Length: 173
Image 1 (cartoon, rainbow, N blue to C red):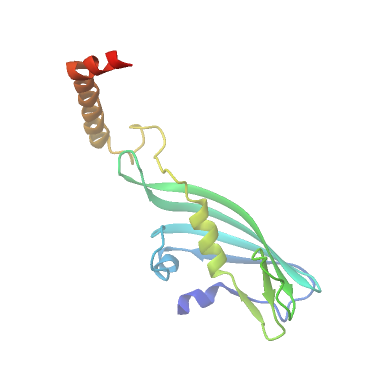
Image 2 (cartoon, helix red, strand yellow):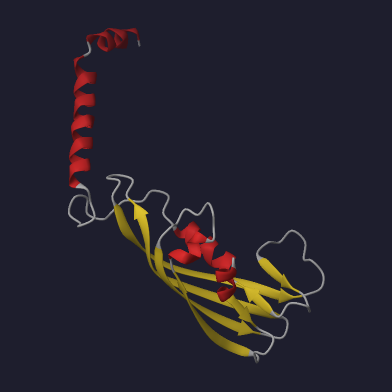
């Protein structure tokens, strides 16, 4: 967890206004999270922190590639991501209730750790179904696997057409 300390932004000495921070997110970042969907990545995270008197507004811009496995051919390929998110952190001594959209910072806090936010934004941005582009034409696509799958689906469709037992049951409709 020591490497996640690198993703903290000290805000106590910052003047009111906008401030820029940049972080590099690599494999070592995701190694800190035991059950991460993402294992390998090469991302650049730019954070614009706008300090106001009563709150901090954090604008995230995360660009780069994540190593993903194609659900169609099982090959590993680089998935491009372009993430834009915003987070608000408010200075308060009282909890705001059930609203989890706003981070509460007390007078004892002097920095905000954004590692959890970066991790969440990246994992949520991963597509539910990952497929490499241009089936069979990219250097990452496994053409042999696609050919094998196509043969299996062709055999399944052919077996369904030639089975007369199913034809006899269709008469009962």
